[in-house]
Length: 438
Ligand code: NAD
Image (cartoon, rainbow, N blue to C red):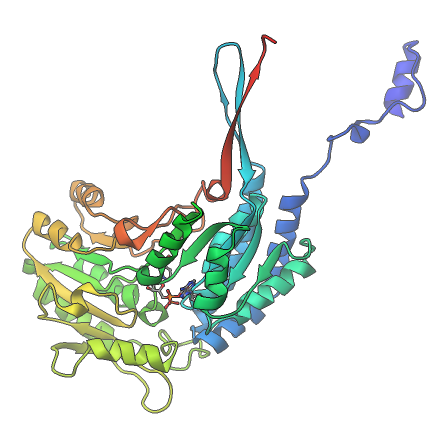
């Protein structure tokens, strides 16, 4: 009305039905997708404690970890929501016209999740896939379907269109395989064992189906003699004991320069023995039980009583308990030193110099994570370049942030999740040339 009045005051012929600024098509219209995803994030936040308690119940995660996991889902949804408005195509200079790229959604994305971090790993793929305009069918692991089902209910509560995000519980060979083989599924994001990942990749080849794989690991923790040995020894236990070692990024090969070996072990021994293992619902607990009897038996099969090393404490009696364990004096190629145990077990191997450290670090078919402890910045950079792994940390063991890329080299995976390009992994690039000469 003010504009109309000013126009008329200047003698202009201003009709009464002149559209107002907000009425123009597209003007002030909010993109519904980020708004919905932000609402979903808010609803998850409102239910964070409930989701965390579910994770403690079904996966035995410590309550502290489970709270972080629920918060991670919220943050991922928020982050992905912001990505919708930044999912920019490009404009490429060409003669005789205009060339633009469109980033189009793939269609329906099948997400096959493992049991070790049921909530975050489901969300790593689901949030950016939805944000990029896809629908998602999530197949949780057999042992951990509850948080996935609850998240789908919360999505509806947040106003996501019905069926846009569905959960399909069931076994891997039935429900998981149905997603892999169905021609209506455009992409599979699989997180789990390297063995199953390979078979899924082979099946996807049949339809040239897009695939992202997040697989196993046997990650090195390289401690050079010039490092802050106290800090390295203090950080080493939880770098492979977090989530009872059921973590694909666990630093389970501790490589220590020979000249610092004795000092490091002197500090590591009490640190391992003091780890509090027990009821995951207790706030003081640092490590809970393993996921199942079958998994406990598998972990046990790697650690016979005769193997030398450090054993921490664990509760006796019922429950799938296994003590924090560090094995020493094992051959470099022993099964416990090369295979992913996926339990609270690490090996310590000595090395002579930088070249020897890199050789040992890369003596694996995996390549997911790794840590480098040194005070020499040149060595930190050389080692960061030389170690074949997707996620390295220097003087720290952190490797997963939702806004930095995550994924494996070699047989640890294919493709990247999270980070600034998370949404583009769920798009197809279409190039369009528009002639200006027609
Ligand atoms: P898994 O491979 O047995 O199962 C993972 C998922 O795949 C489950 O949902 C399972 O039901 C499904 N599945 C099994 N067989 C299938 C088939 N034939 N077709 C389709 N789906 C099938 O692994 P797991 O024991 O649940 O998880 C532990 C593994 O996951 C470890 O090796 C670990 O390193 C890996 N992991 C990797 C990452 C990563 O980001 N790289 C993260 C977490 C876990």
